[in-house]
Length: 527
Image 1 (cartoon, one colour):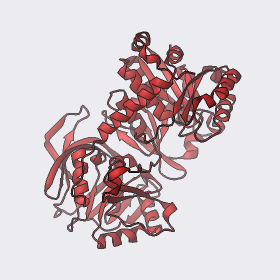
Image 2 (cartoon, rainbow, N blue to C red):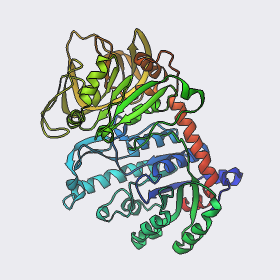
Image 3 (tube, one colour):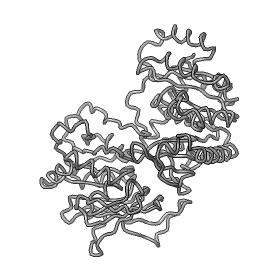
Image 4 (cartoon, rainbow, N blue to C red):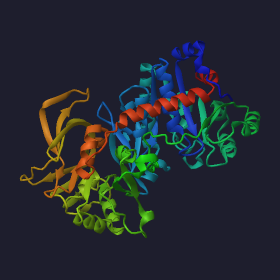
């Protein structure tokens, strides 16, 4: 274990620039820090001249991104692509599972949705056909990446020691064995039990898998590192595997979350005394793409809060703006919203002049009716919407997946934006409606914008209190975020750039890894 910075030497920088191969990061648990470590490693390697790409064989997540080749991958892999200075591509995450209920998930192969399967059909004893197909897709993507890039950094899923999922595994050791790549295991010390997690995980692996593990990383350590040294020495002696580094707990690390909802940071200084715009986001059981709201969560003039089922016995909070987010099961989440009484709270909020925004599934909920005749997301049927916007939505088998560019118009102002659409529903509105907040310019998969072809998106209510749109990523655009905040009541809204924040945080993370990981050993593992 080392806490020095080995990358300060010209020798190691030269070694990195010549590095080729692959490295897989697995974790003792979910949220051990796999996604973050892979993103940080990708940024370290990229800024030292390595042609590096991220990869996750199989991901289960509701936060996703649209790729340049017109597909869909997990949000964490899109962030890791940014860390590599690459545009997201479907090969970075060839299998994506998007849960639509407690037992069902949409299966996405190479960026395209196949069908909705019950969990037992994908993971159970009858799943061999799907597993074989998924593994073929995984290995096809991996081989392409190995041909195109010098180094591929791979993220596992959950834990490799899930006994019930070991048969036919393609997400952890099953992939590592097939691809013949070295593995390091990361564990979170902040939750306690880090040595038991690492030793227990290793013990549950087969002999060949144990041999494939080349070292450990301990994550989120607080305090005096010398107090940990005896435990590290014991672990290395007991397992005969090195601890490649102990990473400190990084307070206020603001990077796109794969799934976990992250609370807003606490404001300090004069900002905390300023009057803020109060923004609530409703946490639905199948909430998707909640990374849309990171610019609001980090904005110094916004008091941001998630409202969840845990708040059901509390009075609904007063707010300036309520946001209905995207959903992977719109009708079920709409029913859940009514069960919580949130529909009544929204109506009351509007009577007092509050603003409401619906994005994607949330936009559909604001309309008159949602029809699912084919049972795309759940059982076939129809549900009455909140009736706040004049749209009717029908869920269709063909998912819309596209990157878009356009203009946002609110309060007689207009700004440009880039974003993406990812939805199954097609919404129809009255021809007399002219209050569309968004004009979209068509964008092909090469990123070229054609101004000759435009279409309207979304709707603003006649009283200017409600806005709906299918566009994800609107708030990532600084000018669009500022305009939306002004529309919501924050007249002197500051401009923040979430893309700049993301870059700063990736570089901060890379600096920490360079200081606390033993890259001499890591290079040896990869080589």
